[in-house]
Image 1 (cartoon, helix red, strand yellow):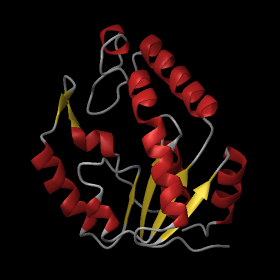
Image 2 (spheres, helix red, strand yellow):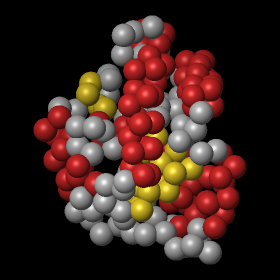
Image 3 (cartoon, one colour):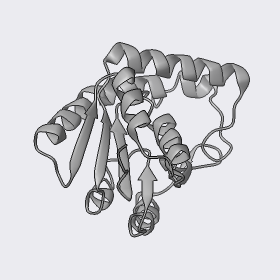
Length: 177
């Protein structure tokens, strides 16, 4: 069984399953995880200012233990200064896009509350800021970052997981808390 370091950050393309994995790690190891989207979006899909985001995540990153489900480029330097393990989900586009499409469509139908009481809406789905468009805009950049970090770690160990099967095997290897 592997022991999880105190400070862990998920990283991956949009739709890869970072939040789900962070939640599952937290449950398995009896730790708290930070939902980044909950701290960066206010009700009504109002984005928290860049300065406030930095302040929030600076406070979180000063804690002794945390699991972040991602890091936005605006403040990725904060967790990188203290993280002990980066879990990078480097899945094929078809997998992450399929997951994201399914999740988004289900949320449109069931109205599930996300990010501080926000909901997916048809307006969001067809907007220039739509999550599916963001997937296409950011996929290559995030994937290149994962591969660069895996070859030349920025701060700590980078665990690059290439498939859900690999991810499940690693998750099973963690000591339960």
